[in-house]
Length: 234
Image (tube, rainbow, N blue to C red; front, top):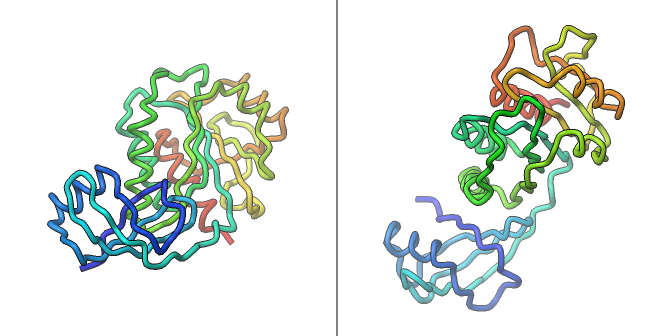
């Protein structure tokens, strides 16, 4: 059985007792039936992996002794996505889970002219990212930004490589053929795509237009395809 892995963002140092959060304590004691002496792994989501041993098992305030700390350097590739909110939040949750597993660095929910849903449950989405980080055994939690107006976001983007995927029949480069960069940002529009005006505005601000293939993809599929290509291209 693998050692259980939990997220505890307030850990600062090793070789001292640490009171686990109520959610972690409850999962350890009530779900996993863990007892004093059992081993767990913890991460702060900022690269640190803590090896710990439970010294007091309580469903609300378990205590663990942090025995060792290892630091994992941040990935060399910084991959960010700006993506429209979706009417069906389940599809966006699915996407956030998958791109976290792949290794996304930062997520920017966007409000575009054709965005149908403008409500965003930040706490729920943050939980999705944490769960996916732990499931994939990573120590870096992606940064989730608050929803932003597309035009304002485009004006402020400073990434080394800025990309926009759209479906207009304009001249575009295949994403998989784009030159490699260690700092990429890709924009994915809502169902119905970006408007021509939004595309033109992005191009004016040095975004590179790309195609994701011959078929028209749903927003969440386009997001998954684009992040997969950016993560694994050499």
